[in-house]
Length: 288
Ligand code: AMP
Image (cartoon, rainbow, N blue to C red; front, side, top):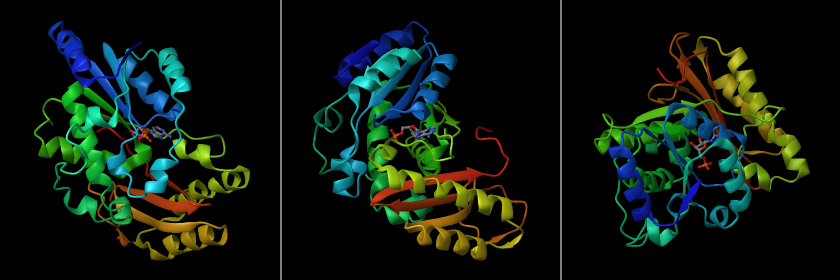
């Protein structure tokens, strides 16, 4: 694996590879890699000639400065895991490399409804930061395919919209990969490293509540199920931002389910000050 710290050097390398007819897969990450990230790398390795991973803890997307400060960094282990998974190129840029003009005057993206609900509502500015970094990274890498995790379902929608508003939908395809979980169901996440033993034992409750909603959902009002799931989480010590049912195509919230619309159940909740998110889809394909 070749490690790049400078975006120009990577861009030049990839321009040559592209001229040689190589197909490029890209996996953007913030590091502290786990098996979920590595599943994206492996999917890219099997579908492309070259796989590029980026590790960049993006200050622009943290609405909570303490969350940014405490974000786990495990760079030596990450490099080893990427090597083992067959990743070809790693971009490890500085903040200055990604935002040469600083964080003060970054572009604004019209994300519409996506920015006013769920993660958009509870993390103001977060998706602007995601778009700012992904837009910049796509300029540097110019990939054929971008690999994203279902774990961040709304982020997948936001990046789809970013491709549309920046005129890239013809050139770049998104591949959404299913969420990898721990044996007890907890969605793998870099933030899980920050859970102490007690919080880790409780954290799986988010997945269990999502499963309960999934199994009990009937046509009609979704409110009683969502309220019950929220109460269960609160009783176990969580501070709940939301438990919601939304349409899986445009993420419009579903208060009354017609029994047909393809849906996703999503939750975000804090345990011991650490914010965890998860979601479950009804039986449906992620990449139609
Ligand atoms: P992050 O480093 O958290 O920004 O995540 C980088 C990419 O890995 C994003 O596309 C995430 O959705 C994806 N990802 C994170 N956790 C998982 C997981 N448990 N399973 C699959 N993909 C994941």
